[in-house]
Picture 1 (cartoon, rainbow, N blue to C red):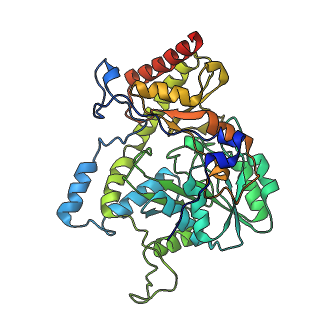
Picture 2: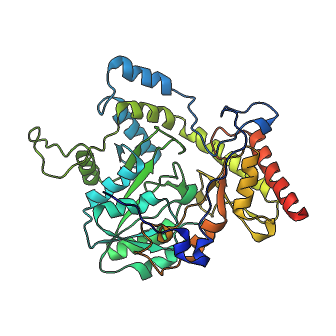
Picture 3: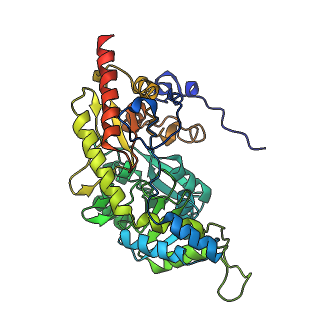
Length: 415
């Protein structure tokens, strides 16, 4: 029977144990989660993120049900793939069951095997490293840089070995990685670049969309993403051969020669027509969602910059950050720790989430990376969290959240 890792935060040692966030604070407001339209926000929970379903979702879903096309065939799958590919500036998209599967499928198409190495940031969601592990390849970690919180491209060259086969940049919280020097290095060493763009729908680097910057990209459509299908994922690429093989492998690798004839080990990684119907309705609203998120982020940043000890999220020159999640860092000058501030906000009905716990500190991977230190990623883990970030967030809600952050600072300074 499979047994979990028994590593605890205390097993990491006193210094590293302090980096690991505590349990999520319990929200004190218990009234059901409903859109807030009243002036009194103190009696409502503001969730950290929720989907915005105000377009053609119900219409397209009803069409699926009435036509009986509810499984992995139907008109909405190719329509969703085509429209999303166009949004990413790519020729091809391959819809999958979820974002983790999209990463795994892309790596399988690449042909990764045990002994191969893939470079990725330690500061990411665990799906990124798990997808590599599924193939038997070896993940190689790299630290973040402190300005954009993305992988430090300047450290990449030192991580490349004769076993390196791919680089997996992650566009953290919607801010694109500095891709030009990364692609130059990849070309020099003949490495494949798979963008983990799960958080970066519509983000741009020098006028080009994420998902079309590397050799392939991977997206998630989980419920908290900018566009959602509930669960779902997508591979994007400009390589016809890569797309065709991914499409074949996601469907048990059925052969075109005859049915039930298989030349590869395939997977049941198909998206349903129901999911794609929601996805098409969502991608029709994608530009609106991005506009809302950027507007909300600008308001948050303008208001929060007046509060000592709060570091607002970045947007580098020549990029368009879509602010999938509006993340902040809590410095010592604020007067409270990150976890204390989260607990304070929870008492006022404001839901938050901590930043990622780096991969080298995860119980299941700790032994593999034992002794390795990544100071920027550890700092982000210790000090970072994100505030409510949904596309449907109102100005009233944002001002309430900021007021509570300000109140927490005042109380911390007066105690």
